[in-house]
Length: 116
Length: 246
Image 1 (cartoon, helix red, strand yellow):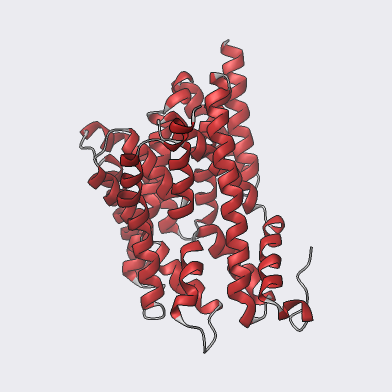
Image 2 (cartoon, rainbow over the protein chains, first blue to last red; image 1 turned 90 degrees about the vertical axis):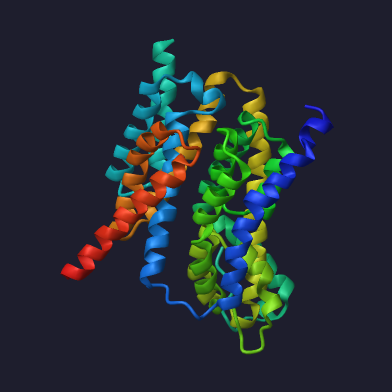
């Protein structure tokens, strides 16, 4: 990888600023400014938290359903199976993130090896 | 490693407090979860054709894993800047109550607002969890320095993870590259599920996953936003219904 490739183009960095940095820092700075004036248990925040969680869930689903890059080389059944197997172990181990992630990875790698 | 007692002379220097914060990253399993997540983000950035500098800047200046993933995946799947910005903005609203609840833990009567700007920037879910755990063990007047140390340590770990993930994705066989990309959905799913304490959180997570494929069929370019608002609102409805009944 060359130096120029590592830097990339400036346009992409502007997009990062507009669509990534500003949308996040706005909320942090509002929190700094208005700190104390908001009730954490308010109904509006419960709704906001639920929508934010569901958006994150959509992102998780998107990566599995429409996989980017190298993940696209893994057959559907292995991707869904890996998430399912990881979830079962996660629940059985009283919510161990580590056990869930390792199980999902092992399932996918074993499946790929087995399918050749 | 145990933090020194509250009245120890160790806490007299802000720099020592910063160093204790930095060292505290070795005291939590969440550091490993973050490392794995940012390994995945580095690989995702590579496979979606963003530059390494771009990935590192996103970690430094956005510093919110979910937002970074939403940004990369939406832009990578052809959404416009406006569409991505909307999805990221909505996902980032939860930083607001987080900052509101964490800053009072480190404020003293004489603290000026500008002294808290960097701590507010460092606030994300991991730091928020760790502040509630560590800060009671730190003298109040040294908490800002401690949080700066803790935050800088976590950011550094993630920058290293981004770089490693980026190069691994570029140089590994397809199978191992796929394994690194799979880390992202797995670690996010399980860490979000673990943080879900209320029924509304669980419903939002489950429905959010199930509704996405339906929303994607509409091909609006705002798939994630559509399924997210729908699933989140239903989850809120469940919460409201339980409150009313109780």
